[in-house]
Image 1 (tube, rainbow, N blue to C red):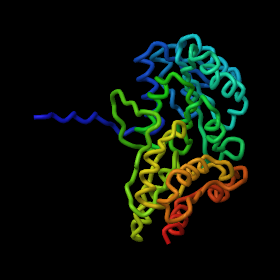
Image 2 (image 1 turned 135 degrees about the horizontal axis):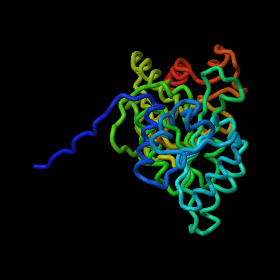
Image 3 (image 1 turned 45 degrees about the vertical axis):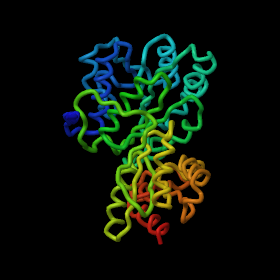
Amino acid sequence: MQLKEAPSATREMFYAEALGDALRQELRRDERVVIFGEDIAAHGGAFQVTAGLLKEFGKDRVKNTPISENGIVGMAVGAALTGLRPVVELMYVDFMGLAMDQIVNQAAQNRFMFGGQARVPMVLRTQGGSGRGNAAQHSKSLEAWVAHVAGLKVVMPSTPADAKGLLAAAIRDDNPVIFIEHKLLYRTKGEVPTGEHVVPLGVADVKREGSDLTIVTWSREVLFSLDAAAKLADEGIAAEVIDVRTLVPLDRETILRSVRKTHRLLVVHEAVKRAGYGAEIASLVAEEAFDDLDAPPKRLAGLETPIPYAQHLEKSVVPQVDDIVHAAKGLVG
């Protein structure tokens, strides 16, 4: 008789708490893991993800840094090249531009330029997205910037369980990983495995199965897409929702398999539509599954404007639940 493996014990956690659990898990597992960033030690980070880690692991492994994004990332690259596995935090993705030379020309390129002899096993955690009234300089979605750079991996989890599992996988990876967390997800809750939990990079998750159209999305728009799919179901439309989880590497096969079943594609993301990552997915489907489509691929994304401060304007420039419903009905109809 074949015995089934017992399911892992789980506990309801906030998204931020699950990230902290992953950091604690990896700090305990591997003494080479170190974390640093602005206010991440005694203060626990701007969003309390690193709360309590200083007390448990000490100042040699949990370090505050000056307000210098270029210096933070440069220190991480150097630490990774010399044998550590640093996890650094930039308080907002908007500030990533201050460190782009270190990210693009150093972190992303060193392994290639040294013929594989050098490794840069570093994780850059940062916070993106709108919805908190933080205005234009603290609310961007810039994943397409880093997804374009060869040598970087890009992760954007939508649930607490995925946040923990993907962060653990990112820390164990021998390549630089840009790990973007949505600010409005930190206080969302979900069941999370309490022990070791690792979600492989490059594997999408079908969050809801359906047969009438495929919605491909990531980060906070996964939650909006699931709410939209529930509304569509009330009208007899079965939408399949795919959370890519990692933009690089991208799980092409899961997307293509779904589109070949539903024959329609809607890509939803918060970032500006022009040159957004949704174009990569739409072109993938157009090139690889054109004959399976009953309608052209459609992108629903942010408007070409900086994020406004006023709440009603902020909501108007990024896709909301009703926008997804409307776009999906247009594809099916």
